[in-house]
Image (cartoon, rainbow, N blue to C red; front, side, top):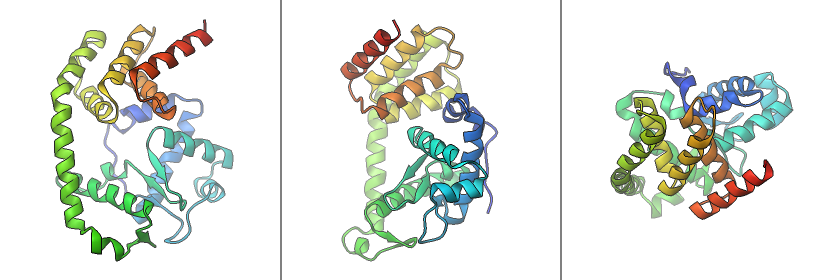
Length: 245
């Protein structure tokens, strides 16, 4: 088994935010080791088909302390790098970016997300799909519905993405190809009003070297706090400013 990393892997917003944290380079090392450990089960991090890794086991195989592992896992969850299911299975959410050819990338990612959802619903046991799903939801039909939904979402998002780029350029200058990609990811995960508000806050903040990474941090914090509206975001920011005034 092997892992393919692109040359700009450490320039991604997630890795920039991760390594800027206290002990960030330690977490970066843990993340890479978890990616490699998960390859045996195509991104599903398990000791075997039945037994999930716990903190003590991960500490042993990564040669880090249990405390570091527990902190790292929480950080990875906050940055949407992993998803931990109720049965203890850990899915490395970006693993499909580093496997295989680009021509199969879209199909592979869709199947991987579908597999996670199936296991959440108890439809996968020991790495196999149970027969219940086949009776009511043929895989071909589910995949077709998912593809259709993604196409509709892309159409709706495309209508407003030009506004997002213009807004970003007004504050931070010309958008690079890499930052355009990151903006697209943020637009897919957040409402446009929240994204605009995060840009406005980042613009007011002094000495921000990587605006897109700071914007990502703001939106991740709001997501973790359950903030979904512009009004809630502004209230949270006012409370934050009062605490440091």
